[in-house]
Amino acid sequence: MSETEIEQNRKELGSNPLFSTALFQLQNRITAKDFGKYFQLSKSENIGIEKTIRLNVGTTPYYLLLSDPLNEFCPIRRMIVPDEMETFLSPEESLDPLNEERLSPVPGLTHMYPDRVLLFSNHECSVYCRHCMRGRKVSFSKERMDSDSLQKCFDYINSHPEISDVVISGGDPLNLSDSKIEWILKKLEEIEHVKICRLGTRNPVTNPMRITDDLCSIILKYNTDKLSIFCNTQFNHPKECTTQAKQAIFKLLRVGVSVGNQAVLLKGINDDPAVMLELHRKLLEMRVRAYYLYDPELIPGSRGFRTALSKGLEIIEFMRGKIAGMGIPQFVNDLPGGGGKITLSPNWYLGYNEASRAHVFRSALTGDFHFSYEPLGSSSNQNYTIISNDDFNSYLSISSNPSKESFLV
Ligand code: SF4
Image (tube, rainbow, N blue to C red; front, side):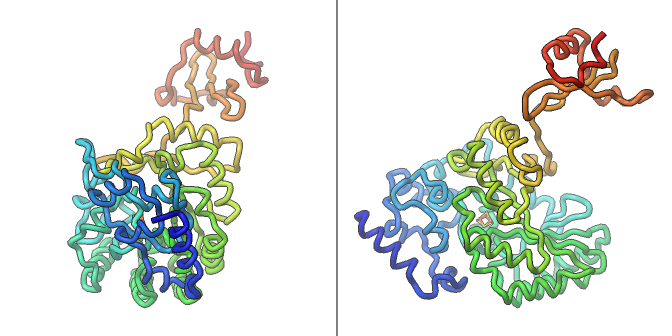
């Protein structure tokens, strides 16, 4: 299709009088067979569309119109259009790298941490993100999360008083009907020991029209003294921070839902420190706090998205000092095999010199070395990386920081 025709098709899509309704967005999702009407597809994308081993292909018109019709490297486009990289399975990849199924006591529920469970409420999404780590759920799941299945999950939660926090994910829970969402929240609110409910949703990013007044009224009804409702969403690029997305976030905030962002580090999309900084600045302007930056999982066909582990550290190092701490995500790796999340930080703490009782730090702002005392009589030496006297003296000689004064002899 010519550039002009593609432009015309996009114009028609965006000018539909119902465009700003969630129903229009869901009923008019664009699937792979129609991508040629809205993109000049590259050879790699055509191969990806035909042979992807990842998940369903589809997007809301809203999210599609954020993408570039001509540039195959547009970050939004890369999150919705498969490319050839999705057709390769690497030996280290697996459908369930976090072992969530093994940690599932009843279908649709994962219980990894003692006080928390992950409830997979449904398997539908507004957009099928190419980097999704739950392709096995959203595209190939044999589970049917009907009311009976969900009730079995609630029964499990009810019989485990140690569970106080329920993360509702999927799929995307906000792709359920209002009445089903209300039913789920009511069920959770009725369980005495459940205090926290976290909605994991990309709808504020991919279909912000879904955050309707009716939905917010339901959330408000169950966001009570008894149950605190949070929302974690996933903005990955500044282009996603639109006026519509901001309005959706503000609606959630008005009903007392605090919104955090869980970005995924994606090669060629946001693996650039300046892009990540801009994203998190925009998020703070939308009153979204940074939560996580995920190192991508080892899922089938994901080689096109994976970055070196050091890239995440480089980004966090770059951001520190340039944005308030609430705008800096924790860089996390969800350990393959189901060991839970760990946070990774740049090497700002260098270690401890026993002779001088000094800890040595590197400033993220200036790179200079700073020094601080361990309390007198502390017996925690075994917890620290030990710095030899020679190394300590060389840090002292290089440092221009006044904190070194009392260590100089
Ligand atoms: S919305 Fe979430 S669950 Fe759905 S495809 Fe995207 S990342 Fe996966």
